[in-house]
Length: 409
Ligand SMILES: *Cc1c(COP(=O)(O)O)cnc(C)c1O
Image (tube, rainbow, N blue to C red; front, side):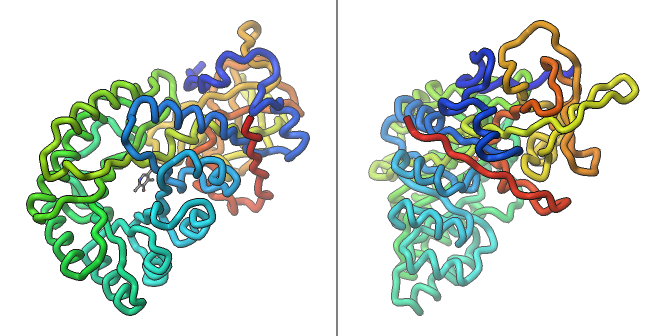
């Protein structure tokens, strides 16, 4: 028997039929077919409310690559102060929901057409290199538009304990801290609108102490770079990277503690940052727990003492649950038999495997679940972030799953 991660709080206390946004999982599957994703914006709204209470005065941006579903995005946009996009495609979707002045565009390898789309719209470009700054300035000149440019900094610090480290080493992301002041001068001399700094040190961080230390160091770094550049930044984007508990032993981020520490840091900030606004951009923390992947059992088989529930979904829709997206060791996401929530008696050890012809397609490995038969629905939680759009949907040519967004009640 292997442990699984904790079921998110909104679902953990449920008994009997799993309810997602006031409908049962069975109803969702009856309507949308199996497999399907269901997203509940009420859960995102609860996370936003918690952030607002814990970090008053800090702008909250949504990093939409975590889940770009247009209906979900339309529900999130009015709740946040900005949207961070990572491609011209995302920019086009975001523009339907948010004034361009509150959209920022980060990511390496922005093509000229993408820079042009952002500059023409008036979105902020988080520059990933000096070469990108130069290209943006030239495009702005050609268009007769003043580009809005922030300097994304490759910090000389890293977010300890985060799943994906982004700083403190050579990186395709951001301009090395040692060169950031030069980039600011280049932007200002080029008569662009300098929007400040963007400093993103890592993703999927759970340890509040590590996040606090990173934020403190980030504020100090922004001040140092501003002094070097001789210009106060209008905005300091502190990045994000708040994680969610996917696995056994993971503990949810203590955002209240982070908020209290950040308030202290900002109260004592250097004078050059006195007029700066501060933003945190979050993807995963806002949406991961709001999504559930539902997939029906097609076959139940025994093989040499192990019971397999073979489902009609798999890693082509929800790669992360198979342990093949951003994790080194495969561990179990929280899963449940959707009509038997909370059952504790008569559990059996089973592996939930997808329908792809690869041993990688294992959605739960030797977990304890109530008995499930063909036709029953398995719920895989934490499917709201880096789910469908981060999965190899074309692999094996199965049809795409429907994505449903529950009504906001
Ligand atoms: C992906 C990304 C984020 C969001 O990261 P999460 O871990 O999902 O919060 C934030 N900022 C930038 C620049 C990103 O690329």
